[in-house]
Image (cartoon, rainbow, N blue to C red; front, side):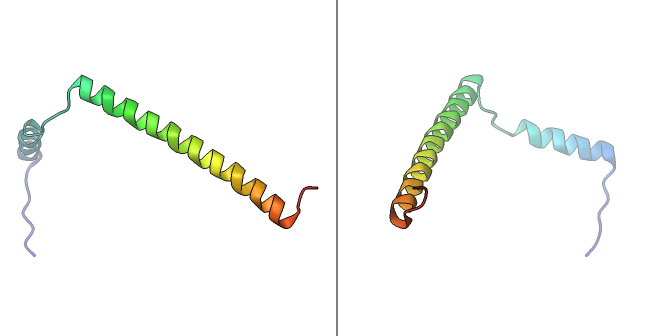
Length: 67
């Protein structure tokens, strides 16, 4: 496989041109996405906490532990 070397200046020009092609989200889109992620993380936290407590009680009831 042939190795093609590029000098750092050319590399930075290429990076800059590729970065200019990116469609960046607006501040509003970023804030909405952030809030959505936080809300779903809280929902998941509540679900798994509730499931853990329920399974703990079920195991205690089935095995008769903790009496």
